Image 1 (cartoon, rainbow, N blue to C red):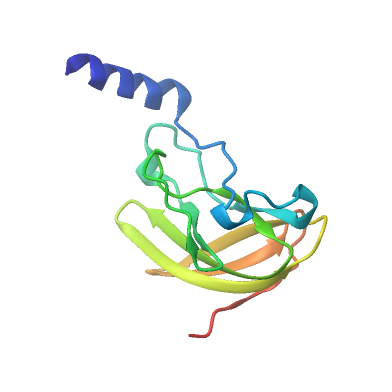
Image 2 (cartoon, one colour; image 1 turned 180 degrees about the horizontal axis):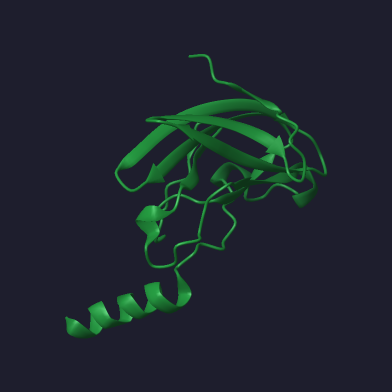
Length: 144
C-alpha cells in the first residue's frame, strides 16, 4: 500500500504526469496522415504537482465520438488528430473546483495546426479555435 502511494507521488513530483500522447479517434485510425490535422488544447502546466492551480482544457469529443480514456491519468486528451473538413469539437475546462463544457464547430484545412483555447470570465468560460501561431479565430459556438 505504502509502496503504491510512494510510486504515485514520485510520478507526480518528478514527471508531472503530463500527457504527451496524440489521440486518434477510432473512426480515423486507418485514415492517411495526410487526411488529418492536429488539434491541441491550450492547457496550463505551470504548477507541477499542484495541478488544481492549472487551467486545463481537454478535447472531450470529436464529431460526436467521445475521447475519454479510462487508462489515461487525465481521462481526456489535450492533443488529437481530426479530419480535414467540418468538425464539431466538444471541450472540457477544469481548474480546481471550477469546470465547464462547451462545443465549437469549424472547418479544418490541410497542413494547418489548430489550438483550442479558452478565456475565463468569472464563473463563465469562453471557448474558440485558432490557427496555431496566429490569433485567427476559425470556430463558432455549436447551435443545438
